Image 1: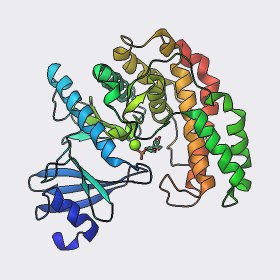
Image 2: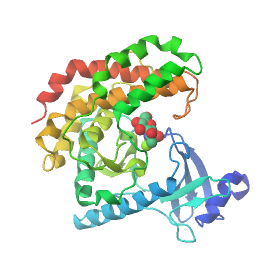
Image 3: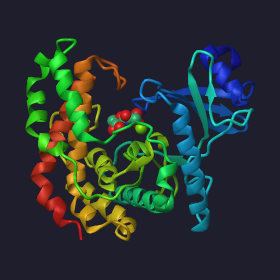
Length: 355
Ligand code: GN1
Ligand code: MG
């Protein structure tokens, strides 16, 4: 196997003591930011990731967050009688005892144990699975409610600061470096029309949040269907629960695939109800009335913000999100814009479900 491994991965595999034991290696195409490989060895499987340094200029800070948060979550799982090895990420250290390996060319790698007997449902309309995904997010935030906020690095500053995102979008429209603005006038107009959704919500408490808790980051137990662990802890930071909730909802409760045909995308109220029930089953104990009243607003705002981010990246030439074709980010923006229109129509119903 070793001879067929690309040389840029060889040093990383050596650093994590996997070299010489590799029986299979495959690229996982799920994420839009980092490069993820599944490494098979006789002693079990591992996840090897090359971190995107454009998105994360200080990746050692992400690792400090992940090491701290995952060991805290492991303790919480043990205390409630769960399985600490399967309910959060397990960082595999290098031979030298570090949580990451930095190659001489600056490539940054980390390694996690593969959670066996678990799988991701990248999209589902099954209310049972959506309830579980919601419940897992509630549990994650509850478990971390005593984690010292000051110990966390802000890995991507102003990540869900929609107002700043709106400013960056206006700048991209004005600079229009590739002349793409002419091909998305309607979408630009829609983002401007909906700018009220970029305003901050005053009075929300700051909590430890995941910031990217969509279904592709939820591991389910393959046998029982129970949600086991939230993965992709790169954006665990101080943040607002309504945006965590909202970012999951804008992805999990859409009739369309984020990367698919934007036509006909609509918001699925049945999926929302299931996710909300699951989330509230654990979060109702700590959410303030203001947070509960703003859950639907969080979903609308995150749909809006994600559309803004895709459209901005399209205008700037696809510098942030990975694309296969030049129009991918525009198609993604269109699907968020359609989703937002559908959420706006259903907002009163969304609110009536919160009790
Ligand atoms: C990125 O790479 P992935 O899929 O985990 C992005 C999220 C977006 C998502 C859109 C660090 O996440 O914020 O919601 O794409 N992550 C970062 O699909 O920007
Ligand atoms: Mg992510």
